[in-house]
Each structure stands twice: as C-alpha cells, then as structure tokens.
Image (tube, rainbow, N blue to C red):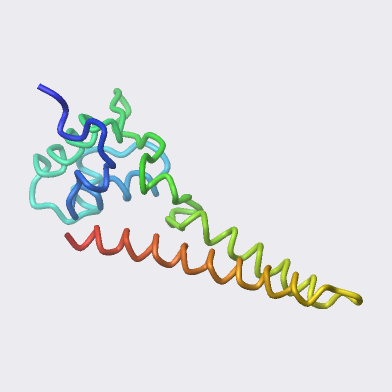
Length: 144
C-alpha cells in the first residue's frame, strides 16, 4: 500500500497539529524527545506526541534514532522557508529585502537610469508579495 504522502506536498497531507509539530522540531534545530514535545505542545499524554512524531517519520519529514526525533530538510511548500534562530521565515523575503536595498542604493547613484529604478522597485514589490503569500499560506495551513 503506498504511503499517504507519496508524491504529494507534505503540507497537503498534514493537518494543523502535525504541521505544528513538524515546524516545532524544525525550528528547534536538534533532537526532540517525546516528553519534551508533549510539554511544548501542551499534549495531555506522551502517546499523542509519539503519534504525531511517528506520523512525521512515516512521511519522511523526521528521522528517529536513540537521541530522539530530528527534522529532515523541508520538502514542497516548506522548502521555501528558512529557519533562523528558531524562527521560520520565507526565503523569498530575503530576496525582497535585497532587491529593496539594491533599488534604494541604485536610486541614490548619480546618472542612474530611472527605468532601471522602476524595474528594480517593481521586482522588490513582487518578491515581497510572494513572501507574504507564502507566509500566509503556511499560517492558513496551521489553522486547519
């Protein structure tokens, strides 16, 4: 019998709580134990935490060894995010910030091409909208 997540974006397969568990383990950046997850997520029993962790292992999002559970690199929609200091941020936001900074720096140069300033400005706005949409999609998926 094929795996329930085979060939599909993990975000499509996961519902709110399992996705929250994966994002917690991903943001943690190290190994997470069942009891630690139980406390962090407010589960009433360790079996609930283990259920979600084992499901994520089956989907290929976590790996398990004697130290606990550790997140594997994100797939699908989640690959568009980067974990920095425990926060999950859309990668396209970094590009948007770079483009905005480049636009401002170029606009201050003498002899600049106004068309190039407009093109850079539009590109930075479009990338910022992309980052916002990606982040909003993830937030919506967490509420499922």
